Image (cartoon, rainbow, N blue to C red; front, top):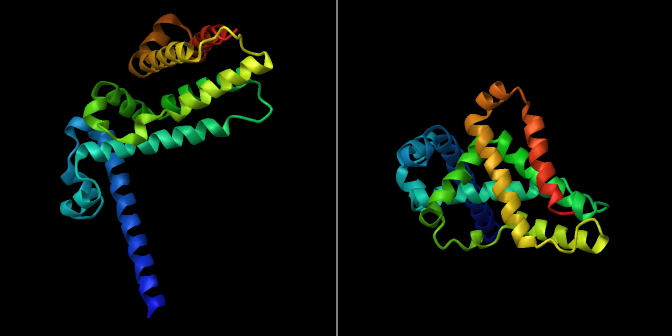
Length: 210
């Protein structure tokens, strides 16, 4: 009897997880196509093939559902950055890899870029007191890499990690906004390739570490 109850419990948990993942997949599509403001919880439930009441059992508001998507993107970004780092890297090489992967991640995933652009303007409304967002894992990895670079001599001891993060993140994010929103027109007008513009951007960032 105990084994039977355990099996039923496992089956229930699996079903709940499948429902949750179905809702998240539907939400990704709806938010990607309609944006946050126009996205409909009814359409998300319909796409997930579940009742609207069931959806609210998993996510009690559109804000919480959007925050969950942002959290999943953040986790994916962290994993993506970590896979680019090698134990033999100097601190400078690690910071370079982190910055370029950050750009690649949000450049090749326009919806991910849109999610975090929107959060920048609605962060308190969407995230609220969600403690998961109290830390920035990529920033933490970057700071650790800067400190490593100071020790191995590849990064100047005068570099202030927090000031560098503010400078580098605003530069990279500005470049992302530039390329996503006006890139094609700018490239056509200047005759420069995106790679050339991005390389110029990162050359300036990396000089700040020396």
